[in-house]
Structure formats: C-alpha cells, structure tokens
Image (tube, rainbow, N blue to C red; front, side):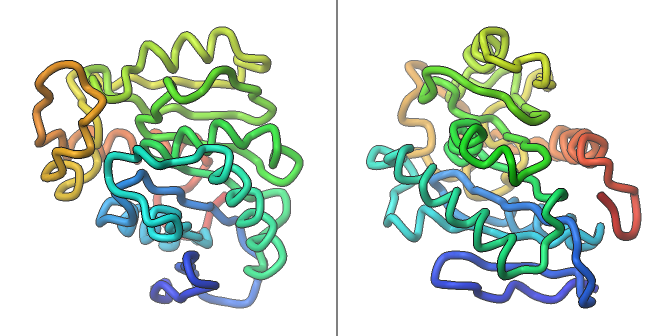
Length: 234
C-alpha cells in the first residue's frame, strides 16, 4: 500500500508507493478549485501503480478562489519549473520518467510550461484545460488531452485549434468524450461550485460528474503513460 500524503514544503505533498528505489513520478496540478477528491484519487491510483505522486496545491499557495480571476499564468509557470526541480532533487524520481498532469487551469499551466521543462519531463497530460488562456503551444514531448465534448467552460474546439497550429503538434493526442462536461471526474467539488463556471456565456449544468467518463479517461491516461493494470509501472 502507498504511504499517505506527506508534506514537502508548504504547498507540495507526496504520495509515495514505498521502497527506496528510484521511481517514475508525476506532478499533479489541480484546477483553481484546489486539491479535491478527484486529485486525491488520481494520486492514489498512481501510487498504487508504483508512481510517486507529487501534488502541487498552487490555489492555496496563491489564495485563489474557484473562479481563477486572479490567476497569473506566468507566476504558475515559474512555480511549476521550481516544483519539477525539487521533485528531481528531493523525491528520488527517475530523471527520465517524470510526467506532468493538470486539471482545468492546472492543465493550462502544464501546457504553457512544456517548453521550460521539456528536458526534464517525459510527457504531459491535461484534463479539460482552459486553452483560451494560451496564445500558442510548443509541444516538445508527447501530450494527452482529455476533453469533454460538451464542455462549455473550456471548449474543446479551442484546444483542437491550438494543437493543430502548435510546433510539434503531431505529438498531441486529443480524446473528446461524448456528452462530457467540465469536471467530469470531480464527484463533488466542481459539481457544487457555481464559481467554476463563471466564464460560460450560457447556463451550464452544475453536476458534470460522469463516473463512466472518469473511468474511461483514467484507462486512457494509464495507456498513455504505459502503466500496467496492477503493480509498478512506467
């Protein structure tokens, strides 16, 4: 069984599979709603597969509200570069087996920072990122986008257009889940937070959680990361 989340610094926590060997690692970057049960679940799943899960709670670090109105993407990019450096130095992560995974605005940050951390990471994945925050992408490593086809908060069409125009865009695999809205893997947090939908020009259903989509997305993420169904991987 993995060890419980242990604080590393004020706003970073680690869920470790156990043992002293160097392992693959993943930095998890939540959306502005913060570290909810879906982030905890992802960290647990990764640790059970033998991956060190590093959760960066930037919403708490910067005192953000769920609307993300005060989010400075440039500051978050700088923070992520630092977290990647700390991970490789302090957590006994394999230098060629580090991945970034983001949700919502955290997914936007992951996409924005790729060019800055590319020599030190193997791949990146983003759940329903807000691609409208990004002017362009550079895609130096393989990227998986997990998008809700009915997402009116972070429309998948924007991500698709950026991927087509990106330098290295052929490395992007975008999966759109039919009928899925924003926060399809978050059972409580996004479903009850009206502030999470402040950018939508239309009425948006507040209960976007879809367990079957969450499970499908997790299976796709496992395949992308080359994780086995059971035991250590990557």
